[in-house]
Length: 165
Image 1 (cartoon, rainbow, N blue to C red):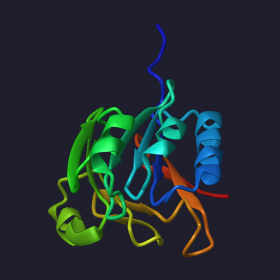
Image 2: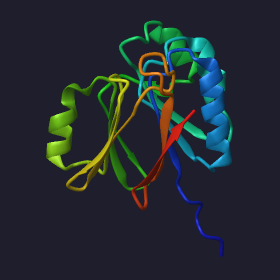
Image 3: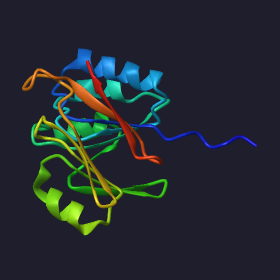
């Protein structure tokens, strides 16, 4: 009997139309056996969708404050983008996703979630609060901080790796 495939997630945010960086992160995702990509907002333009929507990796995203063309984004992302904040259950894990961290403290303090993912600040933030692993992967675009980052997460072990281009 074959064992189930290990879940490997990529947490990414604030790509802001930087297609060269998006393509690099997707190549890394493929190399590392990523099964799911969580994008935490500020994709910006619909023409980035083909970079993220690839057969072997399940995509899930939320809108950010710079995602203005929501209808066309929804169409191009095949309805895989959601308004925020958003709760998702995946393989027994409870996940709370948001772009702006307005509900960050209550989400963490509630201890309802295994993972709280957020973006917007362009600052890398990874910490454990009680049972909750909090991740802001920083900015994948590299425009504000000069650092292009994303996070690889193995949810079963709550082990993570920071990727930097």
